[in-house]
Amino acid sequence: MSFQGEQHPGVEAPTAESQGFRLNHTMLRVKDPEKALAFYSRVFGMSVVRRLDFEEMQFSLYFLARLEQGDDVPEDAGQRTVWTFSQKGLLELTHNWGTENQTDFAYHDGNAEPQGFGHICFSVPDLDAAEAWFDANDVEFVKRADQGKMKDVVFVKDADGYWIEVVQADRLAAMGD
Amino acid sequence: MSFQGEQHPGVEAPTAESQGFRLNHTMLRVKDPEKALAFYSRVFGMSVVRRLDFEEMQFSLYFLARLEQGDDVPEDAGQRTVWTFSQKGLLELTHNWGTENQTDFAYHDGNAEPQGFGHICFSVPDLDAAEAWFDANDVEFVKRADQGKMKDVVFVKDADGYWIEVVQADRLAAMGD
Image 1 (cartoon, rainbow over the protein chains, first blue to last red):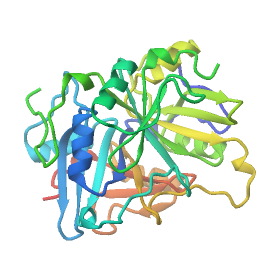
Image 2: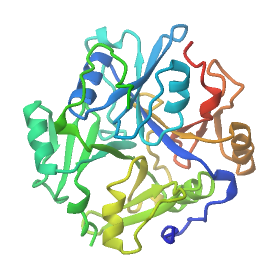
Image 3: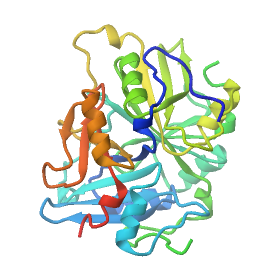
Image 4: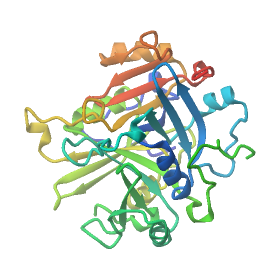
């Protein structure tokens, strides 16, 4: 590993204390897990590697991964929990029981005010094919690849209205130039 | 790969159209990149693999990775952009220029109302050592491992107040039982 990271104000070199730290997951609250799971499994091909239920606190957690060749996920539930918390780049969906039955209930997407969280992003092998696939599934677009100032960057909405950026890496080589 | 994902209402099996999709990054807006970069590089050992500046739109993007042995990051900037958008589990920090000079400016963490985004999570090899390391760096805790109903789960705040969960995978085998 020759490249050690860009230098910018504030940046320090990693030390031994943070060795082995991995960015495991991002958590989003969802109103209706059936709709959220249908969206992420069908459109983005994600699998539920572990659901954890917390009856006393009345919520469930769904850990989703886009499984790849070579991923060796344990069948045993306890081992699978450990596997889940050892991975990189999972999506955790939190369902507070009952929200799916509240007509006016909706979560905040972070892009309307007050702003904060922006989006998650999927890298795909073929952006044009992905756009066609989203259309075939009636996915709502925020912007298409040929719209706006950010060319070759797609934004769609998930079942709760959270934004998902979709990019094809080799079409972004000149980004920011 | 024998395990193919848990079955829950809504879940469909992945199809060919989503093959090769990867969860590339999560984007959070930050008020002051110098403070955010100091936090994520020093405390969590993350490196800036690519900064992209958009002068016309007055913002910069910082892509952060927790580099691991074997990560082969290209030196060339364009190639490094393509590498960045091909990875799994990166953190993107967006800086809208000038927010760092606005005294009362703050982003919304998603946990206060209106709720939505919850947190990002790091998996660490030793949770006790991580807690001591956070204390040594005056990191603000939301909860420690021995507090609350979720034992062995730590929550801290980043420089903008976003929540970061910190777990040690092999201490969570019985979670949700």
